[in-house]
Length: 187
Image (cartoon, rainbow, N blue to C red; front, side, top):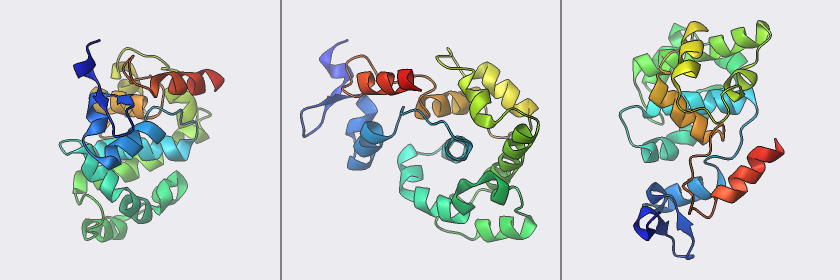
């Protein structure tokens, strides 16, 4: 791949092109993106945040992530699943998050679906990791929707798969790629 397909940080490391635009992106890229996520809470969080990101910059979500964590009870599905109409109204008034009713209601529905999967004997983690190295998010999207998830179209799902290390989205020349692959192999 040509040199222009990567960016070099101040440290001289070659990274995926999107990672070089801000310090926040670089830190997220180097320390988190693509690292295997193997617990329901963090996978549920990633799915929700990817859904909130739809139509917006990921940087906006990164900058509001702590606000989301506070507003959505640390993304603990059991707690969020108990949210009601009063919680929706509270969240619509919270400037620390993206105040979109459909996305807020989807996050609550997704918590309920996460709990439902677990109660049915297939934890969310187990379901999503069935698609390790999948070519796209279409089939997983279909299964999530069938389980009651919302705002989980194929593009959103595939972005979550990359974020959670289910697929390794780091380009070949990226200095993080091999470390991510090693972590994925250790899981």
